[in-house]
Length: 153
Image (cartoon, rainbow, N blue to C red):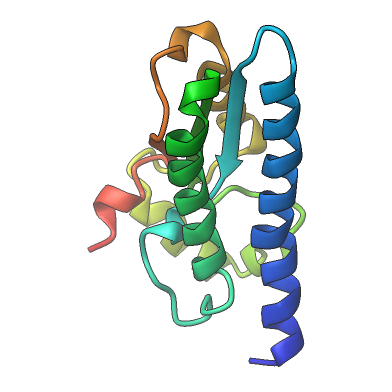
């Protein structure tokens, strides 16, 4: 793996998440009333390895860990921190990879709901975690993967 790939992936996924969370947490702490909800977008890859994901999986595990640590550090300010862990979501980023029909069919087959996710499949869980319905939820991780994780064998 080229060093530049590792650097860029880490900078965008992990460093970017840290700096955004830091800025948002500082604002939520300073405002009156204090509080809010921070939701990190990790990945199912935070929980499992992948032969071609040595640059990606550690950054997503880092986001999960960041949200857990932020839940502990920020709870006293009424700031909740949680993570969503999407499975395979069909986006422009992976469009080329998913154009391999055999690969795509294999991914769909492993997903209990029999389809890949769409970006709007992530929206509902994020809205829930951001809402007052989740006012006692912090430090949690929510798999949003169509059942992929439980069917990886």
